[in-house]
Image (cartoon, rainbow, N blue to C red; front, side):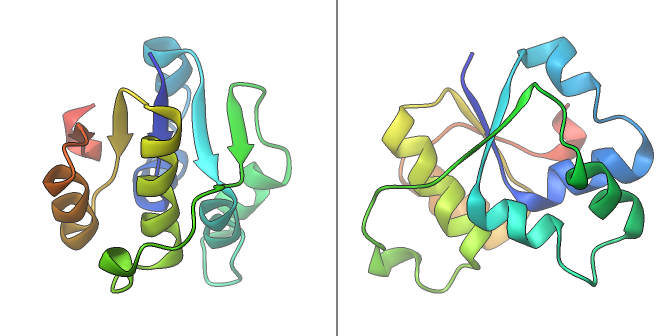
Length: 118
C-alpha cells in the first residue's frame, strides 16, 4: 500500500510515541519535502525535530514534480504538496488531519485517513 503523510498525523504519532505503528501497518510512508520542512520548523516540538534529524528507513522523502495547482493555493505547503504527491504517485491513502486539506483531497477523490482513524 502506498501511503503519503501530511505533517500533523506524523507529528502527533511521534509526540505520543506511536510512530512505529506506521511501518507495522503500511510498510513505508512517503512525505513531501514541504512536510519535512514543517516537521523541522523551530516551533515544532523538540522530540519531533530530533526524530526528523535521523528519520527511520521506512520514511521516504520525495519532491513533488507537479506545477502548483491554484485550487490548492489556500492550503499550507505541506498539505498542498501531500495532495499533489498522492496524485503523482497514485497513492492509496493520504494521512491528513486539517479540515481544509482533508476536504480538498476528498473532493479530488483521494482516500484520506485522519490520525484517530489509525
